[in-house]
Structures are given as structure tokens and as C-alpha cells.
Image 1 (tube, helix red, strand yellow):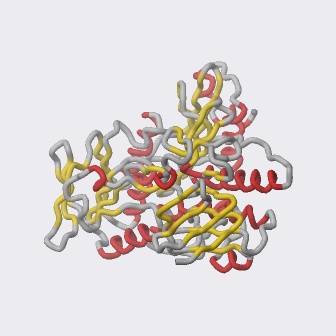
Image 2 (cartoon, rainbow, N blue to C red; image 1 turned 30 degrees about the vertical axis):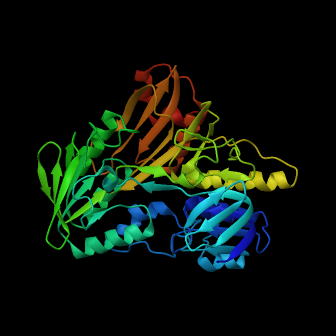
Image 3 (cartoon, rainbow, N blue to C red; image 1 turned 30 degrees about the horizontal axis):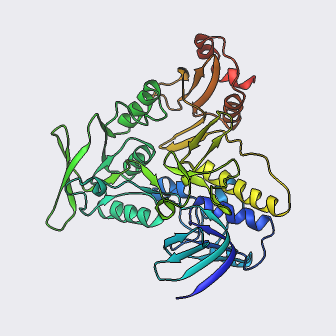
Length: 434
């Protein structure tokens, strides 16, 4: 057992950890003051690459190419970069106990880490079908995707079962991006999800219809309105069949499950105030416990522009909340302050030749504009959401950089909309004139 003390500890090794470390470095952290503790074996990296470029059959992304903070055009923090900046990078270290009152963390190996200020950046973990007692869900080649070790298992399975049958369980981000990746790798792909259309938390039925038809045209089979209720396996333990609740069964060489995630907050239960499944923070990501901050997926924070508390699972917020927390910590030490976090929700995805971005809130009535014909070689269309006579959300597939900036601007400004028909006719030009 060893004991180490630091002025600052970042607990977690994901996107938030990398961006918090970068901000500490830019603020002039002294050698030996900061430690990043991660259970992963590699330095923080840009997690979105795992469901995109990492799975390409040719020219696949690999580390060190996507270490933080290249995702926002910043400096790439290689493992040796942390040492050069005086930051201790403690990898392969799982923290099993946190005592916030005593300002100490204990690892699985029994090592104790003391801190003055803690940033909780533990992120999320995937929901597993074994958690729900699904029969046969522990079979081999039933895979999940969250960390680079998971991605390596997916790559290994893709290479071993080339040209085989893949079933993707779930119709959200992971379901859509992994279905595309498997199809690009020449798998026979079936995507199964219980909702009436894909990506139901964000897409309208009209938007979803475009993607479902596009995917179908690419050879992805889609089964809606049912769930995987069980699995059978070969004698070697590898999955060979997926049973659906509606009575159908599907052959499978690989199953990839993307049915959601949950924030990793168990270490802090009963020690810190929670809200909406996350750790409650203020606009500077301070928790109810002095000198403890929470950022990224685990933080439930005040979304200033909407006047309510939200928990956001997305890389953009993970980056920006981490930077905000460090700026607030350093400003407070100097007797100063920073502005409150004023976040505009932003989501994006890329699959096949498609690329969409969304800004704002998807509440109220929605209208579709542009060319949403999935058979066209370069579809380009968008949508607005209108609540109480104001445009509160904007989406676009195939938009240019300037058009996406215009969408962000309109979602932030929340301008009045004369009518839904006018918005449909004006399309992207409405956002461009704001």
C-alpha cells in the first residue's frame, strides 16, 4: 500500500479528463500538483472515434492518432505529454472507495490518494443485457462499445467473422453507427429496436424515415417494435442465434448491443447531492461537497438558456464542462470568477456518407425542409423545432460548415417564427439571416 497526495485529482480517464488536464496545463499547473487516475490502460482519448474511424476496414484510426485534445483542434496529449507538463498519469488503477469528507480515494490495490480538490469525471458505463437477466446474454461475441478495449474486441470479431451475420440491438447512436460500420465491413446486418423509429430521443418520425430508408438501401435490415429476449450459442460458447420477443429468431455470428448507458456515480452515493440520475452541480460544476466538482456525463447542471437542470451525455459537453470547472477552480484561487456555464446543447453523428448536426432543444412542433430523398447521392435537408412561437432547435443533414454555424446561431437566439409553412419554405436561409 502506498499513499500519495496531490493538490488536484481528476478521477476518470475519458474525454472530460483529457480536456480538464489540458486546461490545468494552460493555466500553469505546477509539477506534482495534478494527477489523472484512470482504470483504462491508455491516456485519455476522443471516444467518438471508436464507433467511427476505429472500425473502418481500411485506414482505420488508431492511437496515438486520437488522443485528447485533437477532437476540438487542440494539442494532442500523448502519454509522455502529461509527464512533460508535470501531470502524473496513473493508469490501470480502479478506485473502489471514495471518502469525500476525508478527501481520499482508495484503489483496488489498496493505494490511497489524497487531494485538496477533486474533479469527478467518471463518465458512463453501458447497460448490459446480463443486467436484465436476458437468457444467453453472456455468450461469446455479444459485444458492447464504450472503451478502447471494447472496440478492440469488436475489431477482433469483425476480422474473425468477416462477411458473416451481425445483429445490432438498439436503434440509437451506437445502433446506427455500428450498423453502418458492420455493413462497410461486408456483414449481413440486422438492426433491432423496440421503438417505432430509430433515434427516438432526438429524431422525429419524418427524420427517422430518411435514415431508415437510407440504411435499408445500403443493405441493413431493420426490425422495429420488438426486443432481443434471448440468445443461443454454439458448443464453443459463441452466439449463433438471437430470439426476439415477437417470436422471430435471427442467425448471428456477432451481436452488438447499444441500449443505453448509466452514469458512474456509485462511489459517491450518500455523500453528494444528486439530481436526475447524476451528481448535482452549479453553473461552475461545484457539487454540494466543498472542493468537489463533477463534469461530463455524471453532472446534472443548470442549463441556463432553458432555466432547468439537465444531464447531457455527449462529447461536446464533456469537453466544455471540464474546461469550465478548471477555469472556475483556478479563478477562485486567485480571488476571481468566471461566467456561468451557458451551454447550447449540441449533438452530431457520422455514418456511411452521412453527417448531421443538431443544436438546441427538440420540443414543440417540428418542420422538415430541403431534400430528404434517401435515394439521392447527396441528400441535404434539415428541421426546425418551434415552441411558443420561437425556433428552439435546429437540425441538418449534409450541411456545410457555415450552415451548421447558422443553425447554432438560430438555436441560441431562439427567434420568432411567423409560421411553420414559412419555415419550411425558407429552410436554411431562415437560419442564415439571423
